[in-house]
View (tube, rainbow, N blue to C red):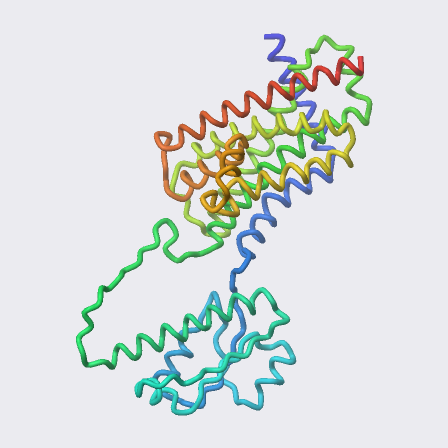
Length: 374
């Protein structure tokens, strides 16, 4: 009972110390509010409200269909302009795309010819320009193909393939971006908060105060793990309910309590990792450098940004030792596909095992660090 009381009091001390650190508080608030929103709405290669103008020389049914095919959220409502306005509007940055439909376009298409449609792109807007050109080409090709097939008199005996997108019917990238941003920030904040808490005590000289008290290294370390983990877990629940479900309107298919249970196991592993890095770094600048070297592979190779199946096999095997790999897997299964414990129990067991190993390594390192200071 005395050990539990010590752990509880030390954890409350950590929470009070965090409450007096405005920089860390701002980082926590930003990571689970604005960062979630921006990560969801500004996914790489996502086209959003791109301005487009159309020069329609044909004025036909086909050209009207093409004009009507550009709409929100990918494009703004097309502006019908003349050729003389195109250069001026693009020079002024009004339009990113200008599509020129030639005269007799519909007649040439129905005659089996291949009329050229000119697309002018403002390449200074490199992200939207590169991605949007493909969108425009796909939209125009699809409209023309459907139009031609509608005018054919022969029976089409080909197989009709019906596509169904499960879990994300509209292929909205914000559904993916918001949740992946939460996962990345859970890992980042848990490592930063625990590592910074230990380094802050060393820099302020409060570690020496703890050493003269009847406290064990285990009690000191576990207090930092539960207190900082609790902060991140509460922030994660807020971000999931308020930012993702509320503001971004992303549907959550599975059990949120089950996801939070998996997040707690992940936090046990990453907070232990943060303490281990802090014992190695011994100062905030060094800790920051180690953090960069640790976070980049954890986030990029865990399957959150790139599917694990597209990575080399030896990378996939190595990353099985990282807690983020299993956390990303269970988070996607629960939140996107509505999986239950019967599906994600292997990831839960993996997180328990990895967390236990990381905690043991951090504890050994922490004890040796304290022994050197005593």
